[in-house]
Length: 242
Image (cartoon, rainbow, N blue to C red; front, side, top):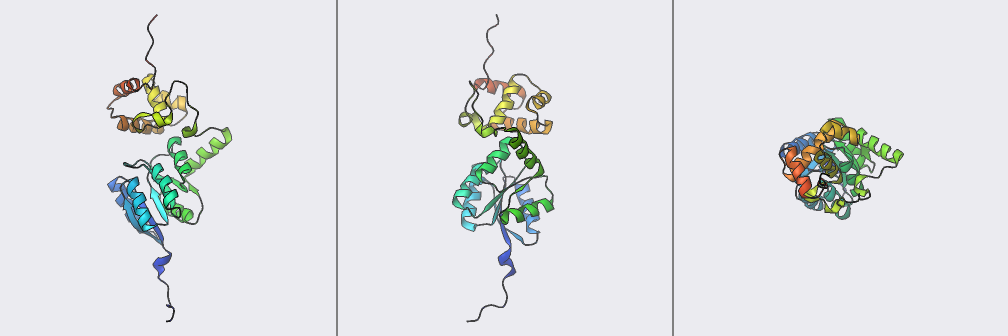
């Protein structure tokens, strides 16, 4: 039997799996990436658990992973993929570029990290690079890593526990250490601007943290958030007035 004269051009295409819990975003990414030369979308998942299951079945070259998803978040899904589907490169594409998102994702095994304001060219370049075994990081993420290396700062998830404060694995409702810190400052009466100055971050970052905190704890306003912080012993109650 003779060998075929031509190879199937689709055999060399990069196979991408998309994981994002937002329907509109997920469908938009499917359309966008499906239009890129040499790249095809082989599946789309609504949460981290579905992403792992699909990756085990479809064996994609690249998994485009959101972080803030139900059932199994993007960091846990990335760690699972590293164990179960090690040949699939994880490229994080998410809204957040704060320390609580970046460092855990990279430690879990993500090979690339982009924010959702990246343009089409950046997404395509990132996919090509992680598929080739290289790392590709958003410029803001690169700056955070360089700063951490220069200053010797410990990423939040590995930080030493503060006396009287819960350890990260004891935090309620899935709050991250950074979110707990922000909630504590809210309970102390600090405004967003004051929290920005205290943590040396932008107002947009603080607003993102506050929105995520309110969603996780079911608070509608700062008063409810303060009450939650005291009920869960995240801050010490005020002492008696002398």
